Image (tube, rainbow, N blue to C red):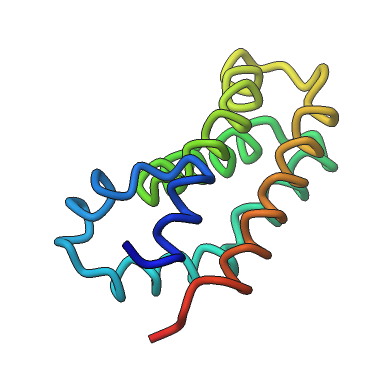
Length: 120
């Protein structure tokens, strides 16, 4: 098994399951991982939270959660889930702490992808 796959698995990515979704095309998957590092929904989420736009924050967080789930970035899904549920309940109380905790792990994953995942 190649080293990058081992690193992804070590970070909690269910690689074999993800490959089924990406028709066993590793380059296809890697391209999507790189696109994820430039995704705008994290920016939209932060802006919506800063402006107390509950509906927009929920949409951005929920979209991010789905995107990350499809990519198999399960530690990120686990991290954003409490924020999504809080926003679903139409509450902004505690969202700052949840968001900044998620943002740190999100940035760590993005840095990992940029530094380790080959571009096709």
